[in-house]
Image 1 (tube, rainbow, N blue to C red):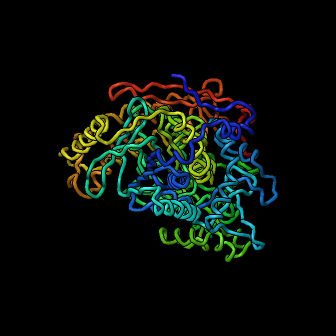
Image 2 (cartoon, helix red, strand yellow):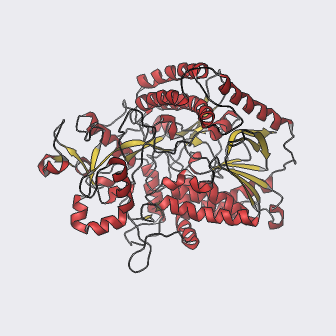
Image 3 (cartoon, one colour):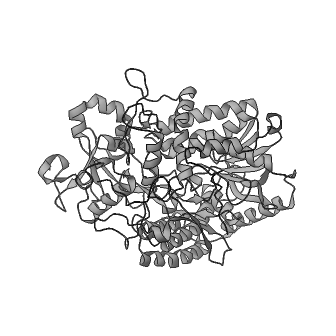
Length: 637
């Protein structure tokens, strides 16, 4: 299969402008004749649905939540990047582009990354116009702070609630279109499958989470904005309902799945406190801006942190990476924290954390300044752990957080199924093997506000689409398949809960395909996961029925897809016999313990093709070319 990324020709600075001019347009009077389905109403989905509605398209938006305001985007607390250079500290579109390509360990497309940096400033303007309350300096200009992997301050923030405030901005834009009648909002409606007719995406099959009714919706284009799949690890920072079903079902209908093994482990999360915990809590990376990370020098240290003198502390990030210090990128900061804990220097009751200390910042800035910047995060930490971070260092440890893999898309954000666009975290396109902090919000809003509205028009203007209804045989066939899958889960008469299977799958993934992977472990996982999946379908117990609210049934369907995804993640990780970013193969590291890439063999995107339940998927390759940021060993020292 030839993976044509459709990257425009010419200098990277001009590609997007050139492409926008060359794309076909839909006459404004004709836009109302086209219907677009948007699945997911987080930052990417809400911004896309609002913008498409504003342009005049008929939009139907879907979320399994009871309101778009409950999308998981609200949890991205720290900030959003943009190359505004308000600090006059040397930032530029080119530097943001450079930092992002380098931060992703040279496994992202240059053209996509440059476009992302290029439109980043417009995102801030859009959000300010919407009333998003970004922090401001005394003089009235927007404030910035630093995030990992960068030596400039380019992160705009609204205290520790940036994701929530941005989502409110997108939500109000969406609400305006709902009131105007251009967007029909469907809540508590979960996508179970994709309808493909004559090779094109033409609709979705959903299950109403209140009534259990399974039905079809058809359109001229389908947009998936359904987020990532970190919940495959069971314990993650994602909301419990985040899942992979929408993009996984699209994969099984013909969309290729790119780089599934690229998972981001976020370095600043609250450590696990018990065996029966179901979720982990993310603290913001912005805390590393002023907090200092350290561990006791002596393994097995029993003294309280306040009793450990400076001479017995190891500020290991500052020691190892003097240039970036505590602002080293997430993949590196996570691996170094794991290294300290593995060597016996972990802190806390379970010895599974490192300290994030604000004592110096409070002494330097004063408690009020620290409280102004991070007060709500400190309060959240104290409520969870019962410790006051103003007086005692926080305890943090890495946790699964974001997935850089996702459905393969070309430069137009279209998958290998014509008419199926994929945006935000659900696609693979912009971050490579590691995402820099504050770039997730940037990509979600860039895709929704500023990229998709152009490219979707180009597709519709060039496509001849027959009018179809929900009585089309293809719709009925997919509905039947979805109903049969649901019924199968309900008829299993086992004795184990869905969560018990999910927890076991998560332990396999964390141990074999987590922060460190090796060939032997991955082969063990590839053997263990199908056996556990088979056991799951025979022994799971799903209580209740399919005609009412049934969260056990919802979780059961999602876990069935997580099993298949987990196997693909391990296959991808095994074949990619190199280390890059969040994919750290223990066999391939430098003498200093850094990731060692193999550009000769793996400077490419790996995209997998579904070939049936009994067949191994096929691996396809899209070569990556670096004309502007030359391949080199990453160094933050």
